[in-house]
Length: 286
Image 1 (cartoon, one colour):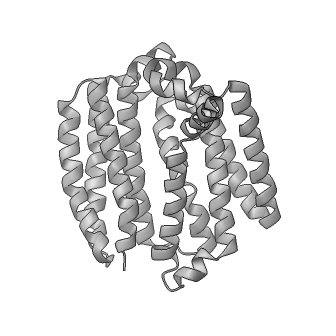
Image 2 (image 1 turned 180 degrees about the vertical axis):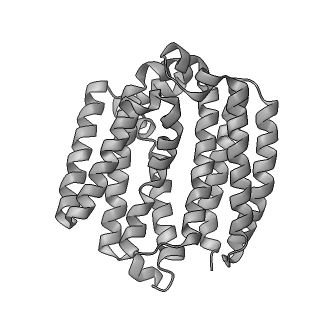
């Protein structure tokens, strides 16, 4: 009984199940409120093709977290000992078995829908593996690719509905910037483990001070994006982007004040919470 409980706990930790649930929920919310607002809620929820896209996204993302956990084995032992313990309640061999099983399921489902869906998710699986295996060690690509990977599944529903506008681009860039800032702070937080494992992150190559300058630049870009999004008729989500202006200013100030790993974790969690608030704010779009 206890063994099963710990295996379930290990699976949830390894696959970041909560993150995947939020990702799938977000795909449905942007479909309902942004990409196909003219369709009824019932028709979208019962849309089988949309369900399959969300399902395949969920399974491929779960497998992505598993392979990322596999390659981060030694680094997480140093940087996140508690998460390391939870993430390895399932043996490495079993993690790899689940990883390949999930990818096989994705391939079978996607090829049964269309060749384009198969190619789209095959590339998604491949780029996650390449990022986990090699790219994350290169400071010049790691943060950009990591943020792009998170956004990539949303293009699945965008392509499905064929809706692409300047407003959608700005909203995607806003999310990309928040994700990029989150990853920069993560690199500051994981400095010790990255240095031991010889990861070439921006803080390792250029130091903490210059990393904060880069973060401040992207904070400024996020600030500008927030102001531009206020010009669109987005309903009550207007207030989310208005508050984002103040949030990013305060967050940047504390970025320069904070200097230790614990406080960097707080900054990273604040970004996560703000992204989560943004997800539920989608329901305010009219």
